[in-house]
Image (cartoon, rainbow, N blue to C red; front, side, top):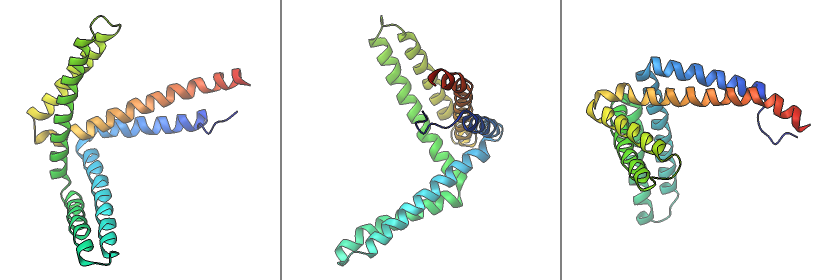
Length: 179
């Protein structure tokens, strides 16, 4: 019985592709990070265009003003990200630094509150790693924009691809047992 889950060969293909793209992202983090910023820029530009179209569809000038202004600003932000991806990388890496610092502190506090529970030390360790990543990105900012996003995306792709490959190797035996 197939519940719409990809076959083992499809998962294997996707997994291998993700691992390769992940390693390429790690090897060329500025290129990979710029690609991420370009995609975000395109999405922001599309949102701005939709807001502008919404504003143009309004009947009264009062109802047109806000969507047109917000749409124009949003579209301009999207164009700026596309035109200057390295500046976008700097901004995105700064946001990532804040994210990792906040997550690290939160996870460590939760771990300390959960002392005695099985595995609490893993949560504490995860928080320490997040804190260290946040500090590294913050400490090297704005230069960290050239490596942080590309490496993080690359690591995510490698881990997801490896997980898909692991699942693909177990699908055939599981499928045989189910039938």
